[in-house]
Each structure stands twice: as structure tokens, then as C-alpha cells.
Amino acid sequence: MSGGSTGGGAAAVAAGMLPLAPGSDGGGSVRIPAAACGLVGLKPGRGRLPDDAASTRVEDLVVSGPIAETAEDAALLFDVMAGHRFEVPDRPRGRRARRREAEAGVVLAQGPAERPVRQALDSGLSPLRVGVTTESPFSPDLDIVLDEDAVRALEVGLGRLEALGHALQGRSRGGQAGGLTGDLRDRLWPADYHRHFQALWTSRLGQAGFTGDQLEQLAPLTRHFVELSAERPEEETAQARAALQQASDHAEDVLGDWDVLVTPMLAFRAPPVGWFASLDPAEDYIQQCRFTPYSSVVNVLGLPAVTVPVHTDADGMSWSVQIIGRHGQEERLLALAATMQAG
Image (cartoon, rainbow, N blue to C red; front, side, top):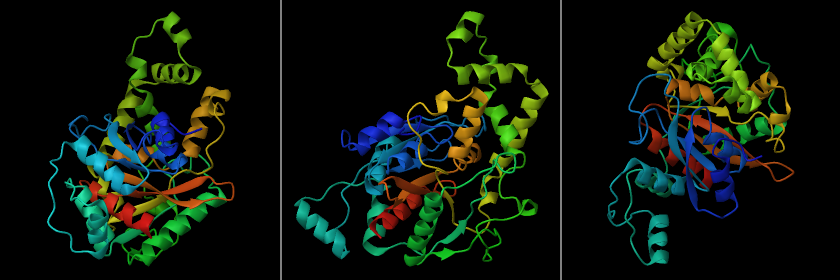
């Protein structure tokens, strides 16, 4: 499978049918298919793009974002989606930029996301403080197991960042060196995330007022979510919403002293088409969480994140890392992704 929800767009870009594609991401639906197809996928922060809800409410999980083969192309589409003004840049100073201009024979206008990407490719980025974790917000409620290639991709991605001069600072938010795991006394993510996120994710379905006939026409997983939401006490939903809203209001606390936080993207290889739907609905949802255990929390927090393909396994399948940034740092994430791809 090519991942969801923007799996069609990602598959079309990977197949060469499209040069790039816009997508929507409510829990990973730009980053998951981008990772499954070996592409760059950017989830902007909540409210960054003009067509998304200008809201700080945690219920507004969905944002729009670009999918492309390279971070440069993703930056181009991000500029278009953001409604940015394109301007002809000053004569380039870097050797790579001058060569590109000479080969093209023209000077192309650039948007404000393209410029830092090309500057980073020409001159590099200032050193960043990089945090790392493999702790999933779904733990300990769900047992999250990373495939060997998911771990290998993380190692490769971190190696590229270190080679580019960035400082790896492990898992400790205080900026001290640490390993890739940690105990729950220093939990990185919002407490009781698995239960709270499921309540938030399904809450609006319980209010939709489906008739019995309509329920019968829904896919099994959707019907399961409707039933869960309808059965859940309203005070439990309100508690979940309040807890996650508080996490969103203090989203950058997750980063602490870091400039960016790196996680794996997919925990295991994308399964065959139809595998998830063949499962019991409750198990389907659990396996989806296990498949992509680091993406939905970024939507809850409202922070920007980019997935970067860094490793190809023995069967030719691509593996990516996810890089989470601070509010308003989409351009920096794209520039960082571009330098990782070039390296």
C-alpha cells in the first residue's frame, strides 16, 4: 500500500505521473504516504496555510501540505499553497547556484521557502541542536516494535545530520547526551495519549446522528468509531479534549532546548493493500497506530514536521525519518531536509 490518506497523490508522484502533489494531514496523511513512497512530505503547523483553519483548537487536526520527490520541489509547492510572492533573487553567490543558473540559462523567481532551501544547499545551515527519541506517545498502552530497517533509517538520518555539523543531543530535553530511550518519569509526550487521542479522533463521529441504515453503509472501522464515540461518556471526551488542548498550548515544551526533534516515521514496512481492512476494526485501529506511532501527536501539538527518505532496504523499499520543528519553522525544516538529501 502507498499509505493514507493522500496515498494516491504520493503514488502518482513516486510513479512520475505528477511532479508534486498537495495533500491533507490530520494524523499523518501527508507524511505516511510520503514515507511509504520514498518522498518528502511536509506537515505545516496549525493555521500556517491560508486555506487551513485559523485556529488554536486541538480539535482542528487537519492541515494541508506538499508531497514531492525533493525538498526543493516541496518548498516550491509550499510557497504556492501559502500564497507567497515569487521574486527574482539577487545574483547567486554560491558555486552550485551559479552553475545551476548557467545550466538553466535563465534566473527563475523564487518564493520565501525556496530561498532558504537553495541557500542551505549552496552554503549549508548553521548548526542545530537535534533531539532524538524512539519513545512513542502510544506507549506504554501499545507495544511499539520498530523493524530493523526503521532503526537503520534513524541511524542513517542521524549520521547525515551529524556529518552536516549539527549537534545530536539524545533524548534529554535539558540538552545533555542521552540514548534513544527513556523511562516514564521523564515522559516526552502527553500523558495517557492513547486513550485521549482515540477519544478526540472519534468524538465528532458520535455527534453526526447517523440513522441505522446509514450506519450499515459505513466501512467497519468507521462504524466502530461511531459506536465508540456514542458509548463514551461526554465527561471522558471533555477530559481528553482538555488534556490534549493543554499539551497543544505548550507544544514547544516537547522540544525543550532542541531546535528540532527526530523520530522514526514508519515502524514497519507498508503492508499489502487490504491488510488493515482485513482485520477486526478494533485491531485495525491498533495496528494503524503501531504502523505510524509518531505522526498523530504532531497534529495534536500543532507543530510542523517533515519526513525525509534516508534508507533503502534490501528489497528496494524506502525508509524515512520524521523531523519536528518549532512553530513557524517550515522553511527551516525544508532546508534541513534538502541538505540531508544532498548529503
